[in-house]
Length: 232
Image (cartoon, rainbow, N blue to C red):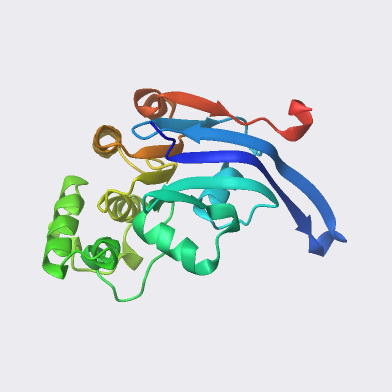
């Protein structure tokens, strides 16, 4: 079986332009392989680079060196060197991302926020909205909120919209950034079930989980990231 996601010799640093151009390195020579149906949890102390790696995997941060290889359209694409068109295509078809916070779209209902990536992938609108409704219902978002824009929702309600949007399309690769951070115990159980079902479908998952109980129940293994000064 081929890897769904493979990181090779990844490096990422930053330059502080407001502090005299001081540069610092966060990732150097990072390696990671994730197989279909596997959930890998990023572990390590705060500031070690977990979020930086996650943003590189999502294409929000450009890599300074190395490759991020994904199985895409029956071949292999390097996200680290992909142009903007290919990045958009990969995000539409192959790579999903659930962040801690919902980027609220004005005047767009929660149902349509969830249905949008399904429609972009070619699903008929009625079917996409039906799946969106089912996913929001499963995540215990009250039906009266489905037709409302999520700008005024609570943090936990917005996170449930984000989760529904991320899990509904059944992406082959899914990145999870603290997916249960704002959820109560009942909704944490729903998310655990969604992750387990995604693994059973063959989805490759990479996550940051500050909830250790959730992490231990869904992760097949940990990928430890150490600050570079400690790793040296």
